[in-house]
Length: 359
Ligand SMILES: *[C@@H]1O[C@H](CO)[C@@H](O)[C@H](O)[C@H]1NC(C)=O
Ligand SMILES: [Ca+2]
Ligand SMILES: [Ca+2]
Image 1 (cartoon, protein in one colour):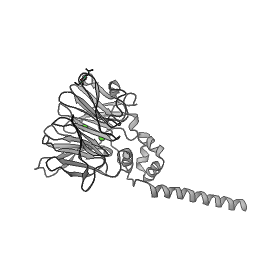
Image 2 (image 1 turned 90 degrees about the vertical axis):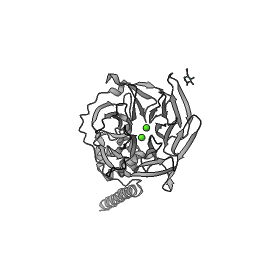
Image 3 (image 1 turned 120 degrees about the vertical axis):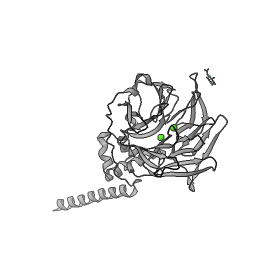
Image 4 (image 1 turned 135 degrees about the horizontal axis):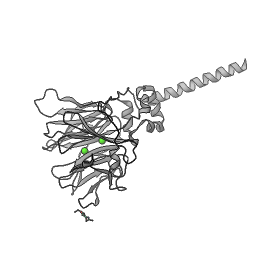
């Protein structure tokens, strides 16, 4: 009798603990998750390991260089996790060019008047020239501009840029993936008025931005929607937004116009196939977030790399990958210049350089 009572007390205690823990996790969870829709890519993505054939530029000097830009004279720029904008001269020497600070420098682009524009997830939009470093936009809509992710400059000096998430910061980017709600934006900075305006809202992690060859539309990547949108800049277009490409075999990060008018898109492998089920369960998402060690198991970005070349009709022409992350993983940008592809990454200490003649 006593044993039965003891057992039932103990099991009540256990149930109370589990319930308490569950409520605690639900109540204090930083996310309010939705189910993630997975892509069903139509392009036959067979691994070719081509990204394992890169040569390594600046190995050991570059801390997770997320994006790459090259100016007309062939000088290559990148922004690294130690707060520097570094550049590679034509004679092969690296220069620690300008110090901005922080760990949150992301997308960069060259500017028509020289220098570059950089997205700083903490500070906003930063202009960097030989003479100075200037924050050109740090506020909009009465609030602080946070998590600016990528930027491109129009021929009239307008800057089009993304805010990946208005809810989560750069270091919590994977929480935005787990939550699966739309907190991203496409913005415009007008140099005449010095104002920032919102072009598109409710994007699923707004990431890479680029202009079409004729600058009549923008392409904006929505990472965990596995798609890119086309945003028309022509006044006469009634429907401003359409899907440029969807069902991508990875989460699109940076996008760059290639010399032949096509586009290079880096595709982050955010979801390991074995753990897809977590993204289908709201409860499991809460649980994963409650135990930070688990988040890294659900995030596959650090184990693979993939980039795709896409034509102006939004069709994939080519895919290059490193299926095991042996040489490159978490590749975040691909930029073509004079017959070579330059690859930025959030998990390596170099920029990959691949001759395109061999592929
Ligand atoms: C390479 O070029 C840069 C810029 O012109 C110069 O500052 C640097 O000293 C050169 N380095 C070498 C090793 O020639
Ligand atoms: Ca860029
Ligand atoms: Ca990015």
